[in-house]
Amino acid sequence: MTQLSDFHRSRVQAVLQACPLVPVIAIQNAEDAVPLCQALVDGGIRVLEITLRTEHGVRAIEQVRKAIPDAWVGAGTVTSIAQYRQVESAGAQFVITPGVTEAILDFGVTSEAPLLPGIATVSELMMGYAFGYREFKFFPAEVSGGVPALKAFNGPFPDVTFCPTGGINPANAGQYLGLSNVRAVGGSWLTPADAVAARDWSRITEIARSSLAAL
Ligand code: 3PG
Image (cartoon, rainbow, N blue to C red; front, side, top):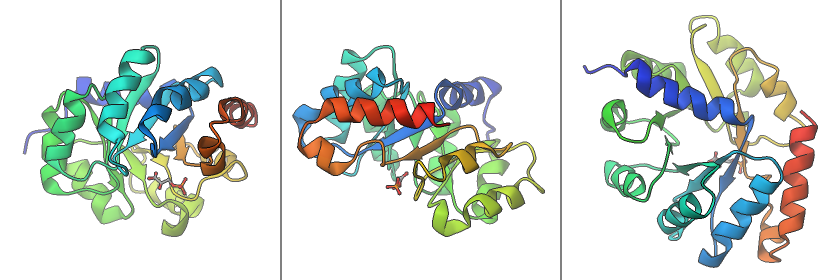
């Protein structure tokens, strides 16, 4: 089994260290991608997870990469190697998966864009651990045990760190970030659907700013 190199790992660590809050973004209208992401960056966000939950994801990654060169732009909700290749071609600087398959873990070991694999259980963590991964997304965090689960993971796996997502909000983000094995948290609360539908970019900037200030 090929192991994740230190270089590959350091690139995932760089993403997680760049910003404690990672917006999980689903683009409903193609023309919103750049102004929405710019609004987040204006509020202090440095890492953008643009998901493939809508048909606009891949194109949005390409556009945002060009328009906002000072942010880390990555792809989320990648569930196949075909999608992994697509988002790499679009310029994704990192790739996040909601879960793991052996094939994706293996592909991520040598991929151009580093992988943050999603896990919800110790067994999934161990699958990734065997390939050399030490950074994981913990998803869906709140329904998979939340803060107590992450504390428990730290016993057998003190060298593993997490970016929890799923059910994170301004009220509980600080509790997660207070854990020694959490580097960043992600979520969709930074891009409320009503603000995006109204193209209220200044509200998005304000949510980003106040969420970062509250940490
Ligand atoms: C994700 O993919 O990370 C989550 O769906 C985000 O979860 P949330 O909508 O509860 O923040």
